[in-house]
Image 1 (cartoon, one colour):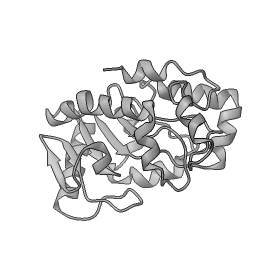
Image 2 (cartoon, one colour):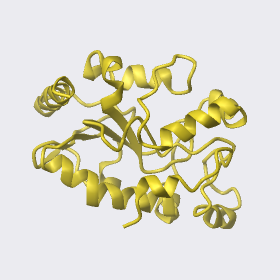
Image 3 (cartoon, helix red, strand yellow):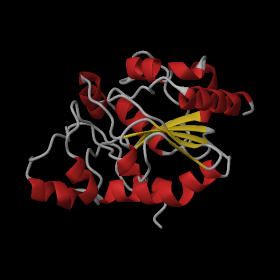
Length: 216
């Protein structure tokens, strides 16, 4: 298995495409919905050690992403995030701030636990309205992510070492919506916006996640 963090350590700070993915995008000749003028973001937060990990499909898009790709500060930020060791961003000037404030609200005062929360996407490339599920299957970077999740992250969650919550596209992660696997690998029913639907499982997940953060 290719190490996820070593894989993303191969990309240059200013590069907008991972070298392993470039042949795929060259063949597609722009026939996809990804904005390749942005820096790829496969995950954010301290994924190597986070007690709570949220799974999504791909990062969204905002004009700030384009600015980050051109600035040295933005490039440094992405390099730090791709290390898998940096705290989850909380700066209101950073892209994705309002998204994090909304999607992480169920964790309570999550800003106090940024060193224990991470987000992992199957796709690393920004897209405003994601529709390119077929492209993900062809990208080496997405396959590396899925392999790492299946062989490392999911077994750790099933054993209770982490709380992993699949918030989007459970079937693409190899999970089934509405199911709980082992001690703390959860695939709740969610809406397209990435919020959990109300119900017993949601309450169980909230308790498990907040307990994991409190014990960290």
